[in-house]
Amino acid sequence: MGVKLYGIPLSTPTAVVMTCLAEKEVEYELVPVNLSTGEHKTPTHLAKNPFGKIPSLEDGSITLFESRAITAYISHKYQSGTDLFRHDNIDEAAMVGVWVEVESQQFSPPISSIIYEILVKPYTGQTTDQSAVDANVVKLSSVLDVYEARLSSSKYLACDSFTLADLHHLPYIHYLLKTPHADLITSRPHVNAWWEDISARPSFVKVAEQVDAIISKA
Image 1 (cartoon, rainbow, N blue to C red):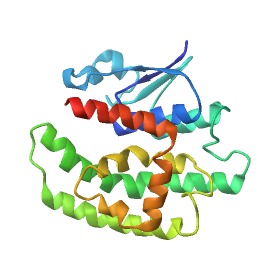
Image 2: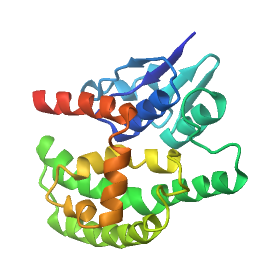
Image 3: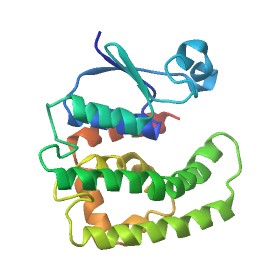
């Protein structure tokens, strides 16, 4: 049985896993999950992810959910492609863990809220809560100030090599740049240079093209 990824490219966690699989040069089958019909809440899907979310991944006898757990598994299991966890350097590997946690706890909450309010709500016929946007812009700005300082002395977040710590930011920033708050990235020289670097990686370029193609047809 080959690797199967259940999800859709428009989902940021799914796009993260797609990018990771590409970086590790792992062939896989993307199995679309139709959220509009509630497929993610069916017994079949709940057997893969009991919380009714995407993505989930099947690899042989193991089934995983939660995108960060999936990318960690892929990075540890497969030796091909990019070493996203810096396995041969314990200090760098430790810093990967630190910055993956920073992305999860500090970066993801405000940026995902901004994207949801500005891009997702109007698409689903809901009204953007501008006060929520404003509050999360302030939060994200503070986080990105820390990133600017870090990236002034390190090419990437964890070390001087591209790792999972950087990869997990890609889909979120791609969407953020489609909002009126792109300057949160572009106004910070080191953050912007880092973004231009990581977003040009072939693994993500292919994923971004799929995302944008779907958006253009919506």
